[in-house]
Image 1 (cartoon, one colour):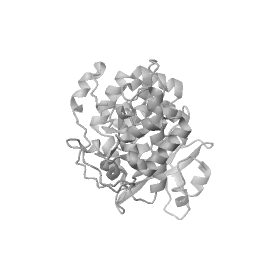
Image 2 (cartoon, one colour):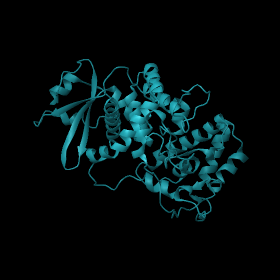
Image 3 (tube, one colour):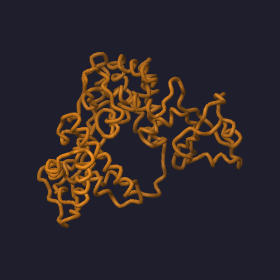
Image 4 (tube, helix red, strand yellow):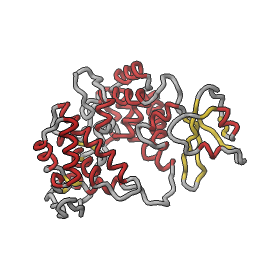
Length: 370
């Protein structure tokens, strides 16, 4: 799938500032070895870093164990799977990009926000909303998710389809499934990516497509909304009525799929997302509400008694979670997140991500109303 610049007839004039080229660059310099033969992968001449290197995954013991499971569990043909894995490439850049940031670097919400709530994305969001207003309104009516939240997610993820990724998904998820970097969560993450590899093969078979035709991010996320293969199979919908789900070529399918994902993860129609709060400087115990998981589970009175001070009257029967947005050496921002805020974190398990989605959506809505 190639990256596309879409002509938006209703708002074409807004597209002039959007001539931003996104590229995933670098030169591959992997030194991964075959777990069975001990041989170093052979460089594929002339390919970019996201094209990867030949590694003959079909000879890796763990890959053969995986093939056995796919044959036994899903009825795949062993010979065909061996041929597929014989063509999969090892992608060192996926390994490098998936590594956690160096320890000790302070989190900075304002710097993070500035990457996403900025003129290019806002203008592109206005054009996207104008072009797909009917689909966004229909998704809001059907799933209860406001248009601005859907617009915010697709804008943060891919700048409205402009940066969907050039990695072959089979290469990326296979590399991460069997050669994940040495981190404390390595085994858990390898198991996750083996599940995504399983879903990639199942999705390709169900859709009647070549698995190598799927392009996405370095982690295997696909299309306008950057759904992982498992999410495509569970939550993607045919929203344009052509009897085919296409998150790479159909912004309408992307709109409906994002709304369906959020609804299936607890989004409640008409509920707000966040409220600004301050915290008492006294030792009232508000700190105990920090880091308590990605869900709204605390009563307002309990939060108030611990020193969390809303700036407005809030529904007494609503549950909340305390959200801390760290700003490096500057003061931390505090918010109360509702269940809808935490539904967004199921898309990406990050307070920064959820707030940037909310803020970008709001910014696009304000710009569109001018």
